[in-house]
Image 1 (tube, rainbow, N blue to C red):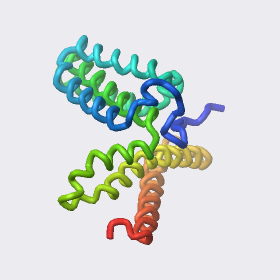
Image 2 (cartoon, helix red, strand yellow):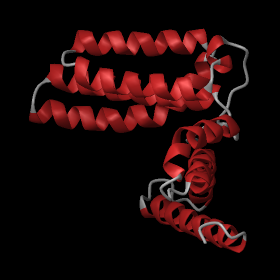
Image 3 (cartoon, rainbow, N blue to C red):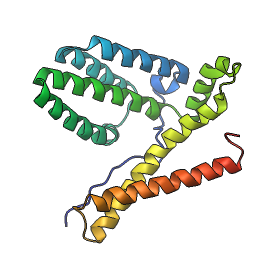
Length: 208
């Protein structure tokens, strides 16, 4: 029997460790991620330049001592989506351009993923709140924004679990090739979760 397709995302995005990246302050990691994203977007215009930024990402994963299997699982879904985009770009323009965009965007996703793998949600919330605190003086809801960041990160693995459940359910019904049997339940379950979350936050006075 063919094993059903599953998206393996850990229940907690954070992967414990004692590497230098794990110990680095969250604010610094967010800053250097921003520098990396801007640098790759501006400085990588040909494949070999994109390869330099990809190499940096690989080195960072190695320094953080992220297991190779975990890294591959994290990058599988975005790789497939970006591959479709790259093929379309290749058809519209040329192969070097498509390859450059594919490598640059995938590297950016990898570095953002590394941030979540080496930083707890609490640390991210504290860093975002500290960075936005000066804007709180002009009325910006700093605490709410920090909470939204944490919820966004937490909903990534929950959405992956929903996808896995739907994949198993449609296979049990013999509808393994039906797009509707996959897309509709995922959307409906995600909307129901968002509604319950919104009601829970409202009951606790968030957003008032």
